[in-house]
Length: 480
Ligand SMILES: *[C@@H]1O[C@H](CO)[C@@H](O)[C@H](O)[C@H]1NC(C)=O
Image (cartoon, rainbow, N blue to C red):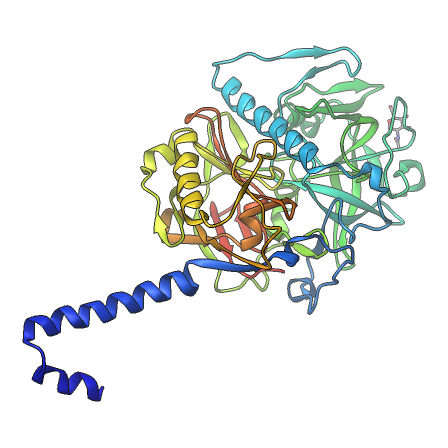
């Protein structure tokens, strides 16, 4: 302070103004580049750990309706998967592309512009372009039947029906980690009749007309990667936690199942159709659920139902509906920033094809115009690092093998209602190896394809879905 008061004796008023401005500017600039607008990362921390870190204080898990979330292929998934069954990063990204293509064609088809229906002889179901189970998925454990049997299910906000493999596996069951559910050993199992309203609802939930086998309703769902599940549509007691139990939960008891479910017993459908889990449990949970996807396969997150104990720091934006894709959760991204600077992309480019948030897509897909703006800003701020060859759909990769720490620009997504969502550092990079670390975003083929906010960029955020108030909320630091 003393220095400022004596300055006028040396400088004219005009010069003083310039001088003060320079100090302010340099402080601002120093702050911006040194800490606020970039992440400093220890390169060694980018490599996956082979040990499962149990939830430290289990903050989200002490609530009654909360389940632990683990990555399908990580060390927290017990018993350990054989190494040979774990897909490579190239396979994961390839499957992710299949899921994205099928979401795009489903939406395009429902708008009447393409017709891509095929007939699949083996399954005797149309090869549907619905969602793909994919490979970068997350798993929760739920109890089914009486006595209760624990089942590991992939949860998916992009589909509706909950199903599990069932005995007898009339045609085929793939290998799963838990024993296959046996309806005949449960006292609370019942079949759904062909004439019931629930059976008719399968049409909109699966995109296939239900079948009928000696007056029992038969469901069939086929995913875009030609995974499928066919079986009896049934009701059963579903146990979330010891004191949260649902009687007569409608689910698929799959007697013919094939596909890339990676040892999980089936799928938990968190979409918006009336047969989805949030809709069937709406009386208790008001279609509210939230999850936090862990930053790495060696840590755990949570999937919570209802708004009990919801943090006040969750910031909400509007949930919309995508025409032709009513099961999806629609969002509106209005801007993006890299290293604290907003990209010059018009909101109309980001809105051109609509946007959804999806728990099952790995890599966020942007309109190509927006992706190239993001990529050039990112590359510019990363120009001190040597680049590496592309990894599948990821075209901006770096070789960090000669560094112990690196500094990467922060990236934020901006939503309607002034909600800024900063992406966790581990949601910005996709690591194949230390010598091939890639920007974890990709472009769609066309600006009019739907933008998909994928699960890599959701890591460590608590994402809150409120289907009743039609809001979606985000909170940073939801899990580690
Ligand atoms: C359910 O339906 C199947 C096929 O019609 C039948 O084999 C099975 O016994 C039924 N189960 C019950 C509990 O009614």
